[in-house]
Length: 275
Length: 314
Image (cartoon, rainbow over all chains, first blue to last red; front, side, top):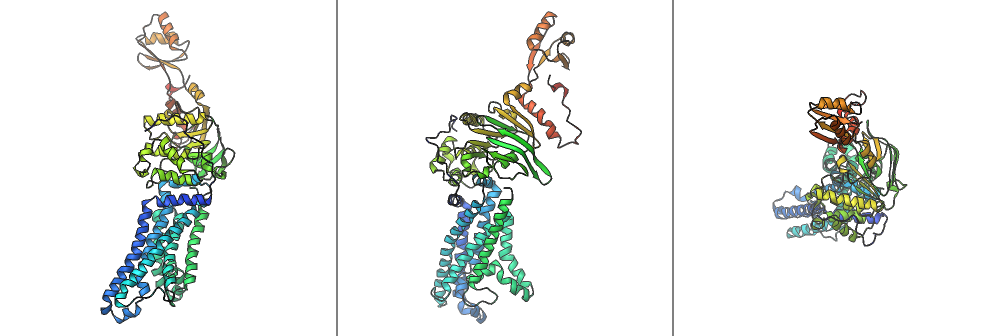
């Protein structure tokens, strides 16, 4: 280790710069890309989304001749190729949680908010940067899942064309579903500040509550069900009229509403609570 | 300059900081001392706006910390060890902090060299020793070339070489006219480092005193005398000083210098085996000062804790 003199060794004093939203966003991008957990979770998202779509499509194609009439009737080439999205949302949502709670569990958050004491720019930067990163992963992942799946299904001439009405919208809708669940995870992390609680509540919201709602009397479940985040996301990635689902645009609006609501609550708590 | 006025922080029922007021002046190193749990870290978090005060205020150069547009250039902070994500490299940690206010990447490299982390800057911080973590903390504190430094236990975990290094660094920074506040629970860390002391216990201010004054006030100047004629010597000295018997053949004399005791003994023809000036160590003085505050938490409050008679200052 060096022993230096006290002089802090500057050729010239560094420029005194102000904290700006863009600079904080650049900082959050550095933070995001410099952790292995980010890379692993994004790879997991892509692998789950693409892998399950391909595996589902391959099984369907190979087992088509022996499949029951009922199964054949309910088959939908778009849905089969996007099978993995409902698992991909878990990985991308968990990363959203971790981006915030990882700072609280390690104490990094104190360095973060000492550098940006007004706090809110950090939350907006995290949400904005992660939105773009998640989108950059989700769009290629859903496209690969779709085209890969259709290629496998084409052996039995079961494929659907990307040009078919609504298909492109549904594939990008699936990417939007993944991306927005990522942001919802980030919002939940900001509210709860604890990794276990964040992941548990995300899992509950996406996987546990929907089947529970289904148990309710249909008069209730029909009116609540479509507004759950998982069903709102589902609505974005389907084509044709779907009973018990919102329209794709309404689904997007509801899911974006969840993302905004969690972020807003996270922002309010961020200003009120001690770090 | 840091100004703390009537600063109070409650966590539920617990009073962590209790009506603290003091000023940390530029141009010198101020030690912020107190036993563990006395409220030092909480006070520093309040200064940095990480926690909101229940009452009172803490300002840096006249403004609340959060009101400064370029906080890293205003105050450099080293927070309790662990305010760093262990999965990130030292370089990326510093870079992410620097980018929040557009500090150049070259400044990050400059500081990595300054704190001696050049060879490990690309490694994950989780692999670092406590001392290396502290050096990284110092680097992050200096990123914005701040006028004020707030360092929480910066010496904790450093090896002797590191302690020497940080002392030189802090003294140099204060010498350039900066405000330097560092906390510690060990008085020994303040010797040779601090010019001024702010001592707290249980969230309350106990002393706000220059280091020199603290030293002189807490040295009782007792002298230990061992003699085969202790009984007679006691009679000779008693009219002039406070004499107590610690053990057979050994006296502790307060109020006379070694020289005077030696001369009196010689006049009376008494033999001395040992004549040794005693100084209460700084650590002892600090412990005695804060003991009431610490013990209060463990016992029923029946008034100040008794002070051991043999340690009473003259």
